[in-house]
Length: 506
Image (tube, rainbow, N blue to C red):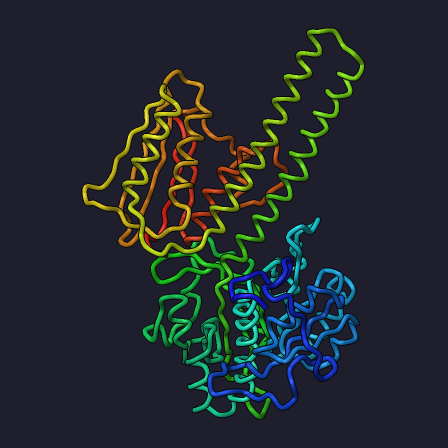
């Protein structure tokens, strides 16, 4: 294989080597044991369920130094023992419900499945695919990234297997749960609606900001104004019926920051079969939720906008073939040129959203004051007739580590000017430090306002997109959602105010 940061699949490795043969179906020699520097799960088995091609060879080579590799193309390989399964789109379609059945046989231990998709795949994973697998990896993927993502899943499996063995041994349970890579809580089964916490691990405190001061309380303190009542009812029903619960729930950290929580609850029973406690597992899946919504919106952009605009171009191209008069010919060419420009704009908007929302965490805080001054100057240069003013706190600087925040504010300012037909559009950007540790940015204009149907989809979901302009609203919404903040659009007779409220350092 090449260097750790080089491509694993989709490009040749540095030395052109292939996977060496060893025991059938296993790329690591039988006598190869765990070394002193091994990590938990190093003796795990990874099943590569995919066609025997170069991709499978490269994946096996990248993972074989740490894990045992079993490679197969037959769905019957699911019956074997493994700790993580990587499968391509063809295998995913072929195994169907067998995946769910295999996961059920492994229960209650966690058994991860990873779907591999090519960067040039015609279709993106559906919501149904995300419900059935634990991660989706796009190929090509860097060796280090592949190892990290597979290792994280195997660590979760290792933790779940360890937990099964330690429930009966409280001392071992305490140690293993404290060191687990996921949030873990233990609540006492009690009469009534409350199930008071008797234990929470360090990862739960890191994830939520709540520590031992919450012991004795019901875990509903994680809920907030935007938590779905339907989801909380589902949780309550599972507890009342003493059965497992597995939901995605919008929760709040101690500082008010929102995050999507993959909550799994299992009842613990004594020798008499009576439920005495509930153990809960919490995992932050905010990025996954945003990625799912992005796939949904982008699919509608491509399915609706591109199809309609290509139909328009085709129609006017047919008109030109019929040799119309000079005026009709000029009009047809103008429409084709304008529509082609719209398509270019859609592509640019999609790329901008992807680059902004997918950007890595910031290494150091940025000075928001400097960024806003640059946005003001750039807007004035591009739109000389516009009046752009800033209202900033007196203290200097305004340090933030919110990924994409300057891009979101710039999008709000430009849209306010671009969609205002007044001779001199007016936009004011106001920044407040409220509440402590948070930054509130308001972009207020005197324009005609944003139609209600364009903002309602942020919460209600997409139905159809008539043009790409709304991607700007989605970009702002996703930047705020990724930071766990609040996004609001208020349109009145005097104009529109867009409010982005985020923790300064998510």
